[in-house]
Image 1 (tube, rainbow, N blue to C red):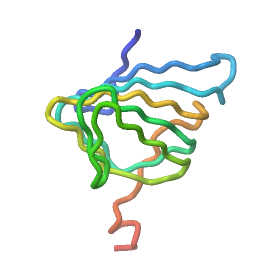
Image 2: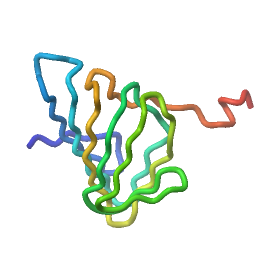
Image 3: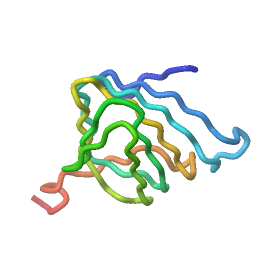
Image 4: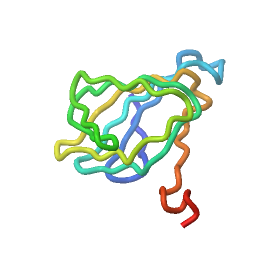
Length: 114
């Protein structure tokens, strides 16, 4: 498995396309977040399923641990994601791999024009 560096805080990921010949194929991403990592609010332009394999993360005000599942509709904004002191490993299945990139969201104050 080839691990790639993510956006800091010890975040690493491995990406697997279900069909390399089809850009819109479902894509599986295994992500390891370092202890205390934080991911700013964002969205994705595709539906996805996330399964927590180990560790703990808090998304907004809700905490998730091993065995928990998040199912998120395309365009849903959420975050920040705050990772617990032991780190966190998740498996994410994006419905359309070509639309799985993270889309940053502005802070509420900026979005409200303040």
